[in-house]
Image (spheres, one colour):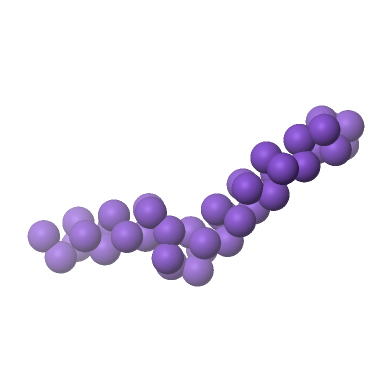
Amino acid sequence: MIEYLKKNKKIVLIILIVAFIELSGHGILASLSRLLRTL
């Protein structure tokens, strides 16, 4: 598992950034749920 993470550091970094953006409420999922609520 750790060897896999070392090989795919860029992928892991992207996933972490996306997860952080989503959790902070500025992500695509948060925007979609906000849109659905306003409809």
